[in-house]
Image 1 (cartoon, one colour):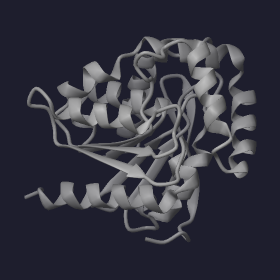
Image 2 (image 1 turned 180 degrees about the horizontal axis):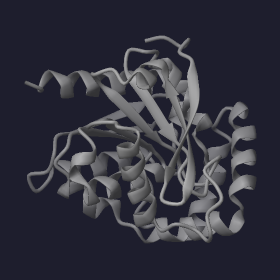
Image 3 (image 1 turned 30 degrees about the horizontal axis):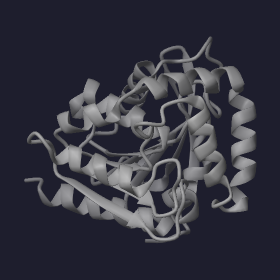
Amino acid sequence: MSDGAELHTVWDVVGAVRVRGRVNDRALASEHGPHAVFVHGLGMATNYLEPTMCALGNEIAVSALDLPGFGGSRPVNGHLSLAALADALVEWIRVRGIVSPIVVGQSHGCQVVVEAVMRAPDVASAIVLNAPTMLAGYRTIGAQLWRVARDSVREPLAIVPHVVRDYVRAGPVRILATLNDALRDRIEDKLPQLRVPVTIVNGARDSVSPPAWGEQLARLARSRGGAEARYVVVPGAAHAVPFSHPQALAAEIVAMARGVHAEEP
């Protein structure tokens, strides 16, 4: 893996929204082989995921999008429900011509990814979920804000400009409406129904999505005849693993890619 890969901005129309994407050279070349698609967390844009995207070098094709209403993918009237965000992700993957990628979700992006695979099972060959939300038993705005506040002091200061810029662009109304949708979602009920390999990655110091929650979700994903599920803890990391510990997350994506492609005829 390398941290020297160049990323390029691409634009596509999904529904009525002009969607901003970020891709590496291999994705632009439409080469066969593993492809990782990244989905950002609530209120954010793709930029904070780029350390991990770059850490993958050009070993794997890499693509990411700003979900409609966030980052550069605007404007959108009102906010999009979780289901609508999932549909937009599926449509974007198909518009880009990406076939059976490994889809990587971060935070609320994990909920979008799982919903997308529920709605379109063929859209992903595998999924990697970093810091899946929302923690059962704490599904209120107050509880989430408290956990985010605790986590914020454990993150690198360099992530602050990303958070401030992206939250200002999305606006409080859109963020709160999206958060309310996320709080109603029960990812733990969906994971056992998936039939694609799953890797769940948690930071050891994450207060928003603690390691015990990630371990519980991995156990549920294996239950009821569900898919293969692997669980990984990143020492020293908090919630934003793609930004703070890119090499660790990139290694898990490469391992998943090798496993998926080893099974292909």
